[in-house]
Length: 120
Image 1 (cartoon, rainbow, N blue to C red):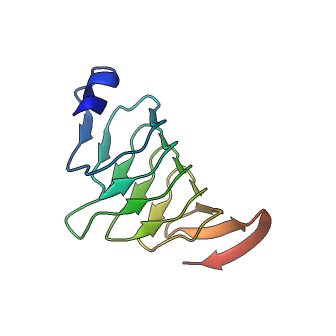
Image 2: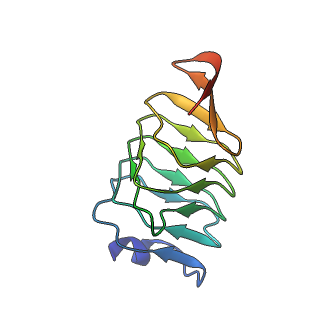
């Protein structure tokens, strides 16, 4: 509830059933954003038109995670620490630490600083 007080008034930002959110949360242009997660770690950045969570389960999101415009993170999955989820990505499987993912369905394009192409 405290996060609702800190976020700009926006009728289209929905924060639902968050049991824990770490310090340093930054919701950038949070219009049409739905955040429904089990836990969100510290230094979380989320842009607009993002959907996190659904009826199939709530994701757990690690520290230093950035989710870009239009991405969907769905299901009871784990998003590791230091992860970037690209614009428009659809993530329905867990992502390990230190990765960048893009695409629909999402795939890993960078892991531990190295360019890769790994299906989730």
